Every structure is written in structure tokens, then in C-alpha cells.
Amino acid sequence: MKLYSFLYENGSYQKKYQSFNKKSIEFTRNKLMNDINEGPSLIGKIYTIEVDIENEVWTA
Image (cartoon, rainbow, N blue to C red; front, side, top):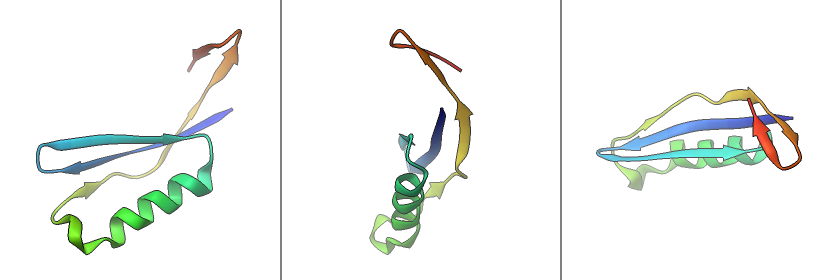
């Protein structure tokens, strides 16, 4: 299973966005990139992590 993630930074505020749905994470990232009201910010590239879930335990 793939987990998609990117980092958003605005001043001292940092947030990591993560989703198993690639289209959802792309939509969120594009919305942040196009939102001029957010001010100066850094939006990282989307990266993929392979995740195995067995007995409700995650390993990457």
C-alpha cells in the first residue's frame, strides 16, 4: 500500500499532509499552491512511502 505525503511550511508553522489517496493529496497541495491568501510559504514535493499493514501495525 502507498502512503503519499508532503510538507507545508508557513513561517514557524509546519504541517505534514498524508493520504493513501493520491488524487486527494494532489488536490490539497494544488489548493495550497494556488491560495494567495496564505502568504509566503514552502510546499514540498509529494513523496511516496510503501507501507505494509499487518494486524493493524504499520511498517515502512
